[in-house]
Length: 254
Length: 322
Image (cartoon, rainbow over all chains, first blue to last red; front, side, top):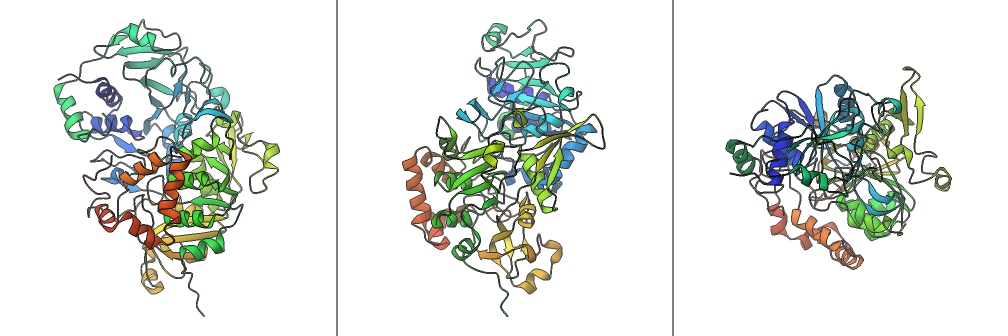
């Protein structure tokens, strides 16, 4: 069995999830990835949602963070402001390992735009806005999911909805944020990018089986260091089977 | 003396929703949104509304599309899973349209601002927004805000934390909400209501608002509701009107009752792509249905029954959702 690129993306997201830790999850592929992790190597990972619905184990793919499909197996259905407190306190205590984020544009330091293209006050294209993304980016480590296209991986985003490493190594500290939190990985349908410890600039860490480094460079609108890139591990038939037949059998996302 | 706050949706909206009001709506995106009350505002046509967006979706999009909104404070607007971004909002702000004033916050900031408002605080200090364009770019300038006294004079203020020198905070003003619209599973004539399942920010906006209208699946007696205060969400003293409206949150979910209506949400996504499609949709489902019962008849009994959740689950297993 061979994984499609979208399935490989869900698998790469799942690999970011460690057993026993808590993750802030949105809908779409991050949830599929997190559910895959829970059904394979990380059965004790906690999925938490910005709606303050905590630790559910969805049996059908939810379409929104408020979808009652999320409540299956939950420990608490808190009022929403409790999420705010949990996010700000338990990110500091490293109970929250990471939050998953996405966007329309990303820059080399992992700053994300999910607000609009063009002039903010007179946009060419308007998106939903932050949702909970800005808070996740300001308080927590993040794992970012993106479509890998040249027009999305750009030197400067039109609007910074969610800060990454800001403008470099001291980018977070100088605006009043914890410098030890920030984006850890960017997962696309082509591979996985990480951020250099010193410069905080994005580099290519992994390319998926069947993808070339050239293809990734061609689809990236800024200079990407590829010197550390290795091919991702091919997923086992067992993991693929869980993904396709258990996590998303209705093919809502994959 | 009759202290009953029970009235029809038409009476409640006429009495408590006025031109220029600041409106907040309970529920979350596709979950327990009081559509029955929003549809009534569309029928009555109150103008120049200022919407506190929060986790907003198709209902606020309908108010924007119908030309009833002049200010929209946004952090999210989508029928998640069915429309990526609500279409009438896009049409109101993109490419020179400039039909409404808008400004952006983060959804968790709006949540905590509503909680602050419910505690009687005038602002909340947060670490959100710092370093992002949520603070670098203003949708509504200080100058423009002077013309709209219901808006806070500034979007935010960044200030050093007086108790932790060297650490900046973003001070976010709490909104002054005129009317909160809530849908609950139960309410009674004195205004006490009970939400089952996720509470989202409903209690906060109900407490903070000058007036709160509650639509409910079931109207119970005061005696019945006060027999189990441990299950109740909000005291009736915070509530002005109670409207009995079974299936009043359709097309969104209602915990323990019904699932969202994916096919209806897809119909809205398609219709709202054009002004003509949107107007036809509003005619069919809002203006041609003078009452909630007319609306339910238009949706159809068979279809409504098909959305009933499976007992023991919060949703209808295997529901046709696409």
